[in-house]
Length: 476
Image 1 (cartoon, rainbow, N blue to C red):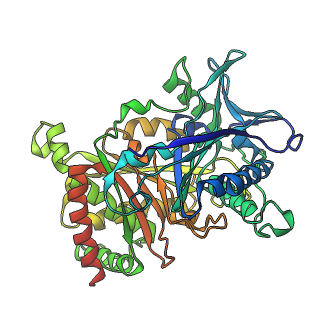
Image 2 (cartoon, rainbow, N blue to C red):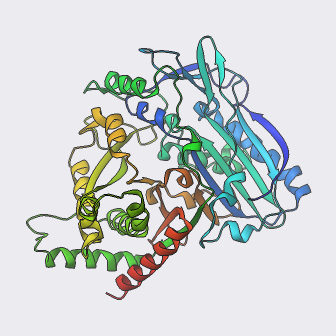
Image 3 (tube, rainbow, N blue to C red):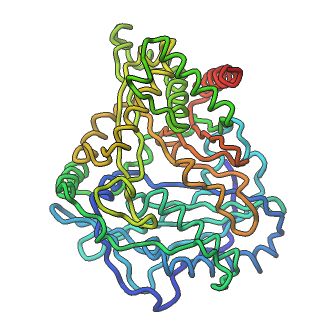
């Protein structure tokens, strides 16, 4: 595990008297994420600076620019207020002087190893993730901070900005808006005349979110049913050990993706599926998820056999489930600003037989299933089944559920603090959740980065399957 030395702890607030007190109600889009573990993201930058120079110049500017950024993104300095019992609803509360925790640290760890794509101990990067302050009891409610940040210097090598936040506060689009705004203010050294003109502020009003289907009371009731009398926004991290896991990054270039799309179409035609009578949605997202999902199932197949001692026929008929989210800002009956701050994600599930996914046409069948679900969402089904978002999670999360974190559309590698594009970005919570982490390829070639955390044995098998498959696709 990477060793760090704490240099200083800050409590960073928006500038005094710059933000009025505010209580933000949770919408039906927010409520399901009360059950989600915290989001954890790391940004690594090449940054050959000494510790004295960092402490005297870079660190003060990071703190000052963060304070200025929080003037607009004040909910991240606020707290989540969890009432003690139903039917009350949680909310986000900001008061003047509220702050988030920023920790400055130093590490002598091997920077090159931490930004490598190669498989390595998953726990190496965990000390770079800040800890959220513990909840506190206040006026018969539990109050939880929403965000914490850690800046770790690797002297004369690089810097890492780590963020942990509660998903109930913001989705990926809102979080990345915050990070890019902070980076823009830092780049301009806090001079408003030099800010990025395209950096518009967040839209924090919840009034634009119209609950036309009466989803809020349904989802709130389901949440209370899950948490009982001890509301907590996340499950216990102890439920999923990460000590035996390794993490790696896999890159699919544009040539790989084009070859994969061609192979999927060819295989579907061989299976007598006519793309003219049944249009197949084969986006980069669809084929990437299909490939990774099938490779994950195959890499874990022996584990599943050990876990399930029933007949092989019963095992083959088991359902493997997949879950993805989609931004609904432009998928609703009413208008939501593109800069809306909060959650505006639909949650979508699908299942396929294990035997189908393990078969010769497994990737093509996975792509067909995922593509069909994406197409339903694109054709106006953004809120279809939304009343079951929490119940479906409990049904599908049976040990064989694969989820997706991140998206190439978020453009995480455009987060430039003035040091250039990130050398690497990691989604850390996948070590616990087992999700697939997606991002755009850093080199800007139209490719995709896939981050995974698996047991060592599964990762070794996954690497063989992935490399064999991706080389076959590129030759088409």
